Length: 522
Ligand code: BG6
Image (cartoon, rainbow, N blue to C red):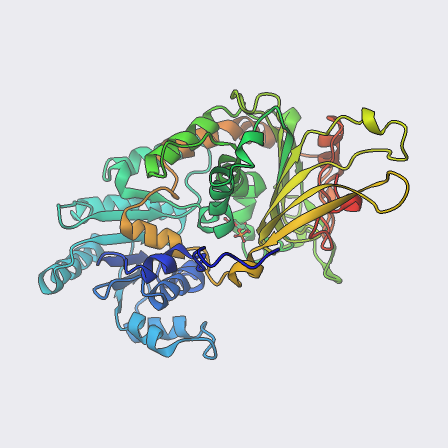
């Protein structure tokens, strides 16, 4: 493809773009509950570092880390520094950031911790005139409700004209419809909906945000984006990792709860929603919610579950799920799920959306394949062409971020022979590698008060509603065939059968299939 137009803004990172236009986030105190945890180390601090480096944070920012183990601020910073690669670390940025950090020992359930936090925030207000605070729940989900209740009791959720108070809540938001409703009810007693930022980290991915630009900023796609032209859509989130050290969590959760009503539905929303009237948070989220409301509740006959047995990944033998730490030797927990969804809207009536996600599959790829209707074959009846390759728009969410479009071309020669070929766009060719960890935009947007990329209460509840039938049915009908796919494979055979009964097939999950050609599409 041609070199990028110089008028196109180079940085793909919104925060960076904002910063270069001089718009740093407003002053605030970020309070991280779970400061000693994995999420803080691996994602939050690196994201804050990236934001700081691009100048997107206010000089009056402060970060307070709350956790139950006693440690000094220096110790806290030291554990975070150990994860940084000194070769790539910008020392000035790191020192700018760490100079604004403070550790506060406190039990999440102890009112005294909130009293001390309140004093600290009041001091910030007096000394620096900064009253706004963002509370980040980087804790196990059982603490979400209690921490917010404590914030409420201590008066820390109260806003004033000059001081906002916001809360970011991590995943999982509930385990089913009833628990999600209960959690919403509990936190909405303390906070108003516009103070709550429910995170789905898939919405922090540039490639996910780009789906809206692809659809709504290009004249060529949207006219085709409906049941007249699209045959079906495939959404895949394949992972090569197993459950690693998360056996205890995963046994209770499984692939359906872990991935479908959150991450995969967010991808579905981006693909399926109607155009919003603007990019304001509620305009976008109204359209998302309308789409979720139109999902026909999934029935067991349109769903497949699987569990990995021992196998080989990257040439190395790996254990089966039942042999992983903290997993029952006869576990019925699914590590793979495949679904067929129907969406009852004018745009999508009759267009199936197939979804699959699994651990220990042959390759790591998150992608969306929009498969267009075939052109009529009749014209090629008397030629050597046996079938017309399908037109597929493949959105590669990760890795190898980009997209490709496959279409038919005449193979040079005297006879009419057709090959499937593809046009390809890779982010790295235009914008360089994506340096962000995925939380930058989310943190930045929350500081700005923009909730577009966060999940609203009604969207969360209606998403659980769509899969509640499966959550009810599966525990009552324990699978007899687990494990039913080998680690390193493509998932259970039943998943292939789910599409075969509609005369369709999944795009293969193979490490070598990065670009679509005739030989490797469905
Ligand atoms: C998390 C799930 O929310 O998303 C994990 O709990 C999963 O099980 C992860 O591995 C996938 O996210 P990503 O960004 O690595 O594709």
